Amino acid sequence: MPRILGIDPGSRKTGFGIIELNNRQLKHVINGRLMVGDGDFPDRLRQIFEGLTDLIERYQPDMVAIEKVFLHKNADSALKLGQARGAAICAAVSQGLPVSEYTATQIKKAVVGNGHAKKDQVQYMMSIILSLSDPIDEDAADALACAVTHANFAHVSNVKSKLPEGMRTSTRRGRYGR
Image (tube, one colour):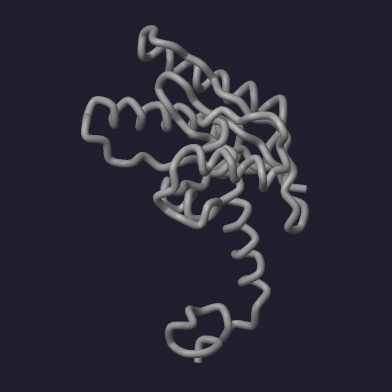
């Protein structure tokens, strides 16, 4: 059963969620957020790196899915978010884990069916998809949604790899790629 760590990076709080994929069944393992506060920025990056490294060592995920940076109106915020993503990616890569990246639109479309869904819709769908009874923090819900998105993409890729060569291509050229 592969374990997928989803990460919703942030420079003050970074959401995380781990799921297990068994065939098409998804099982919740853990979720939460790393609170790194308002201190010195390099120290916050260290806390993200160390917190995720500890999480990876403790729960042994097989792969990581992380949300891509989207364009902010504020360049300083975008740079800080990018650096927080970098710290998170470095934590995964330093533990030998493959990292996949998804846009917020891809994630929302995969779990809600609408690429412009609101945060509360993502939270609701994560509680339904993963059969969670307790409320989920929005950062953790976004991280779980990232992991679920990766599980969906991994399943589709696995199915496509088992198709005959002529059926693997886009259907835009006609039925079964002909």
